[in-house]
Image (tube, rainbow, N blue to C red; front, side):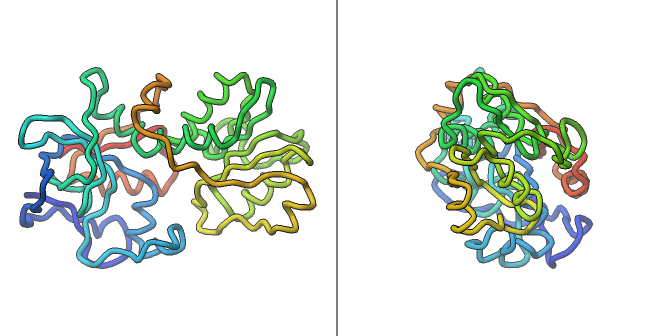
Length: 277
């Protein structure tokens, strides 16, 4: 099979399509679509432990990627987490979920990891009608879905993005009831200070800056707010039930994944990027 691998940590130019042995496992699929995520660029640079402290890092040479759609040997179309990486023409999928016919590969990948994250974050936040909700990275895959969920709950949504919306200069912004925090560092700290004293809720599900949220127990006690992570009980079927409309980004060929990494790192993308073998 063909796989895109890298043999040392560094820039996107190190991602090279190569012929490698087929993986062996119970649920081998012919890959039809690969989800592409910003975190994979961080791992490629050798900074994975900064973003994912629990992640031991890949053994080189490595194949990146954490989500694929593919066809099983008995003809089922499934989505799942590949055991040995996603950037390939074949993969062994762990705990595959069969996809309904009316959901495209691209839509499924836009809702698989990012959709479950968004639905879990919205559940944790307990959004109420009239709430003011701040969504960081609002143009991204999770951010666009969180915006939909918050608006449907009757909230006023403040969409922060480096390219549109309210941006990240929040001087003079009125306090908010909910913050969906995924950047960390200075931006995360500023967002925390925007929470309404006594009732604000912040849901933390990442720190794309590489710097975790710098908030202490004393800070939380001072403001009387809640800071929480994600519940783990959200299923893909539950995500589908919300009838979310994911923003579908660009489609790349397998040997164009380096180009996709450059776009992800430059923050010039909108919606979900995928690659097709």
